[in-house]
Image 1: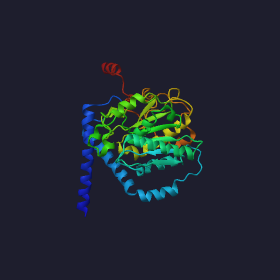
Image 2: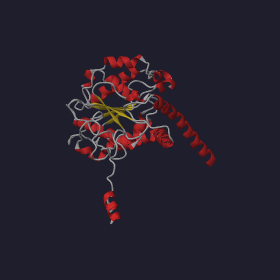
Image 3: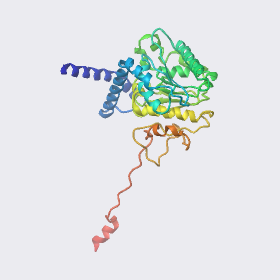
Image 4: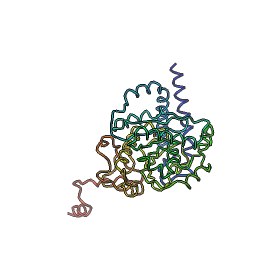
Length: 360
C-alpha cells in the first residue's frame, strides 16, 4: 500500500511538471515587460513545481468535497442583513463553483454576505451564450437587490466573460466594479490542447479578441485585473495584461493560474480590492488614486514608493475601516530593490589614522 501511495505521488508530481514546462519555454523565448518571470534554475523550478502541485491539490479537494461543502456553506454563509453589495463569482473553463470555496470564506470574513456564483458547462457552448447567461445572472441580482449594484469577480474564462459583458457602456453603469483573476485578455496558446469548442475558442488567433477590442468602451468604473507572476495557463505572459483603457493591473503574491483561487493571500487581496471599489463608488479610475503595489509575501522597504505605472499614490481613506484586518500585507515587487544596510560603525580607525599611528 505504501509503495502504491508513493507511486501515485510521483506520478502526480510528474504530471504537474509536464504542465509547467510550456511556461518555462514561453518565458524563456517571449518574456513580458510587465510581468516578472523566473529563470530556468533549480530553485525557481522547484518553487513553481511545488506551488502548482499545491494549487491543483486544493482545487481537486474542493471539487471532490463539493456536495458536503455546499451543505455546510449553506448553513454557515447566510445573508444576515449586512449592508455590503452582492458579489457574483464566475468560474473558469472546465471548473464549477466549488473552486470558490476558499474565496467565499475570505469574503464572508471581510463582511460580504450576499455571495452568489454563476455555474455553467464548458461543453457545447460558446462565449456569446455564456455572456448571455451572465446577463441573466446579473438581472437576477438586480431583481433581488434593487438598491444594490453588484460586484463581479471572474477567474480565467470567467474574467473574460465579464470583460465581454462590460464592453457596453450601459452595462458598466449597472455594477460597482469588477475584478478578474488570470483572465486571458488576448487568448492563450495553451488553448491549442484544450478540449471542446469553448476551450479552443481561446486561441489568440480567434477573431473574437480583435472584435472585442474594437467594440468595447473605456472602463468608467473600477476594473482590476489580478495577474499571477507564474501563470502557467495563459501564454504568452503579455496576454494577461488588459489593453482596455481604464483597466488596472495588479501582481498578486507568488502563485500559479489555479493558485489564484486557492492561495489565502490572493483571496485577501480580492476582498481588499472589492472594499476599495466600494469606497470609490461614484468616482472614475482616472480621478481615484490606486492602492499600493500588489501584495507580496515580504514587506517593502518603507522609504520605497510603489511604481507609479503599476499603482500610483495612496490616500488615507483608500481602504474603508471594515477591511483593515483583511488587507493583504503589501510587499515589494521585482522592480523594487531593498535598500542596502548601512555600513557598520566600529572602533576601527580610518586608513589615514592607522598609517600615522604606525609612524609613531
